[in-house]
Length: 81
Image (tube, rainbow, N blue to C red; front, side, top):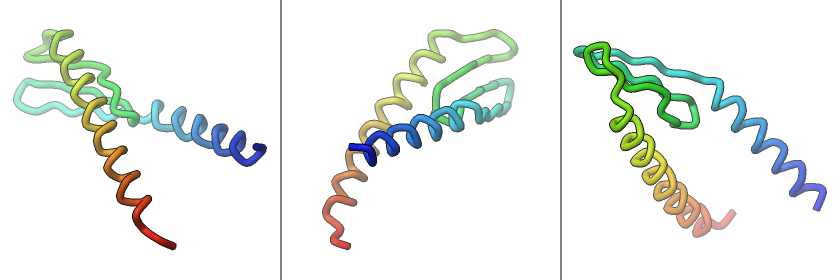
């Protein structure tokens, strides 16, 4: 049980570190800012914030991360060490 608690603490620490990482990319008048945990912070097109696009990108990123995580867990679960 203590091992699980330590793993949970480490996972939370890693999450906090990833939340602090920010990537800011601008290309052809489109600016996107993402946190390291793939949370969309900002989407601007020609200087105008687009909150609908922010929400849609955030939702899509969450779905792809969830799907990828499930697949990887299945693949790792099949590997025998």
